Length: 404
Image 1 (cartoon, rainbow, N blue to C red):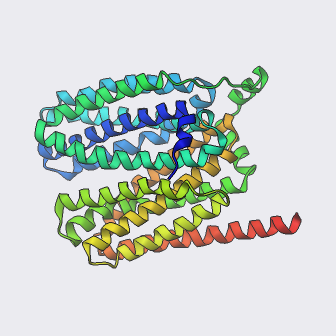
Image 2 (cartoon, helix red, strand yellow):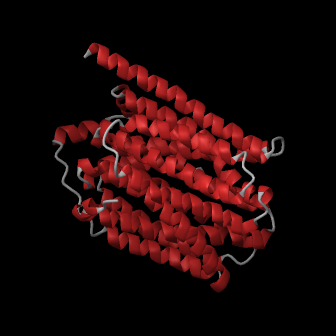
Image 3 (spheres, rainbow, N blue to C red):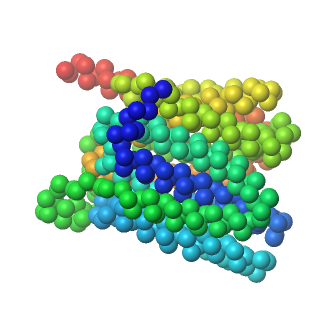
């Protein structure tokens, strides 16, 4: 596995480090907040409301963040959102009883709003900071970042909260925002080359007009937007079932939940090894990985061995990591740089609420279906989406060859 290219990407190294610091700190806090809610209320309702509040802001603030990214300094936006979130990260220190739950809800909403703005800005910054020939490898490192946050953040957050109390995790989260802001402030962004007239035209263009224009200019973008939206409708099944499998199917309790989330982190981290070797037909490879991811979930739903389930979760996450790196790279190459913030913002505004609805419906479905039956249906859903899109992509390539 060669990572020598990262030596050339000084600015991206800083962005990656800021993502690790920011993400791990946020995971620390998330684990502690949910545990605190259960201790205070003893009810899953408060947890459900909090989880919903983490997703709802994306509908409003992700498009705003994307639009801001195309108009103003990305570095300024990211630093500002990190600094503002420090106040809300520390506000959980003042929660001591049920009367203080409003603080949890307000701060959770505001932290999520900050993430909704920050996310598309950060993603649209990547193509500006890295050499185009390194884009696929960098997007693979983004999957490694998610894996690191899953493994280090979730595990360490629970341990710190248990040993030292939730207050420590809130301070760590606040310090992580401050540290990430400091790191990002050292990044040097290239100057935009667009003329003043082009900049004015871009700023005046309406949100939906931009969306329509970008979609119509690229079939791969159409394929991937459809894939992202439909896949988000199924991702909720995986998010719900990973805990249900651990607790109800394998009787491993919290240890099993941590074990399976660790498997996801390992799979995402390993995806870099594979993506590092890819050179061409990125979209096709990504769709095949989606098909294989669904296959892994089908097999997971049928296995009764904990060891097998662990390695299958690693495999599913490996395919997910490869596919996501491929898809993000295609989008970054196909979408014009001046519209990337807007498009990534709109995409997050759609996919995150869909994920929330999918999780809710999956929870309700478990009243009527066994976990393994639901997992089987989810895996088959991934496979059908992949087969459909592979057929469209293959037809497109055949037509291109015929007209060449």
